[in-house]
Length: 411
Image (tube, rainbow, N blue to C red):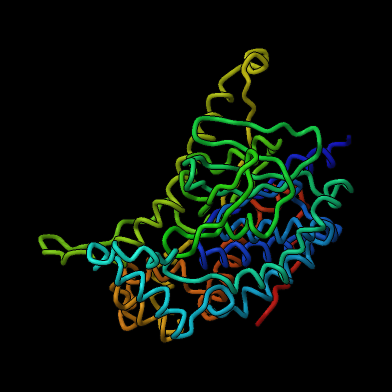
């Protein structure tokens, strides 16, 4: 295998979770496709042989994998969906469904002690994401993945989900026959074709969307969001043979703390702020820790002689991380008013107010704001942040940057 082929076979894209925040990833992918064209590189197959994702990132990763032989076309198809999003494409937002699910769920939270004798009153989640099933059927033609693996356009696809039944974190993967499954404490892998059910499970934000049943080890378990209990987000890509990882996050790893003011008495946090911080812990914090772990290993290996390095079961990894240059919570707070009226009313009961454009008010909304004003703003930020690191991106892929202008889509 020549150098270019080897480099491609070990290049991975890791897409993290975050609900609607994953629109940022799409903007980054648009910029990567445009940079490849500006560098005069051959269009066609994806520059990534290994694709892994969790939560909404699993959907983006699976959509790219389904079109691994036509990267630019796949990016355009994904971008069209994210640029024209409405919440009703992901979850029911009509009065009947919101009352049946959301209001019912909140009522049980406050009066559950008095209603426990009515066993039939057990709503599974705050929102009903049934519309997402139809969207996945249009956006993600997963039946192509096994063929693309056999044809050599794709080495592996992995999506993660967390079992409510066993408490284990599972990386479901499809790859060539030579790839062996792996297992660690509280996390393991499972080989098999990736289905839309896996994507529904991986993107099932806890409490917000219902868990999905998946077959594993000869029985059925219920799975939720792939970012839960995900202590090592980079691990699936590494186990699948990645040596060069491009990671697209959905939060700033070094975001400054919110300024509270010296000597001021802060009000008790609204439930929306508590929920937003809890989701940030699920979706965002583990990635920063895992990146720091990989960087530490790289630093240690750089101190070893070639002979010493050959004696340890570790290898250096080329790592590039793209992440938002500004707070997505603050950006979401400016777009809360775009949510359907029923969802705004539901979130208002949790403390999210459309007339307060501050980051704390947008923390929870940032995961549910599948509305095109917000998703387009995130895509624009993803494009801008990626192009701002043009030299690094081109060097990561080994592209010769001729300084040609970059042509980006407009909406």
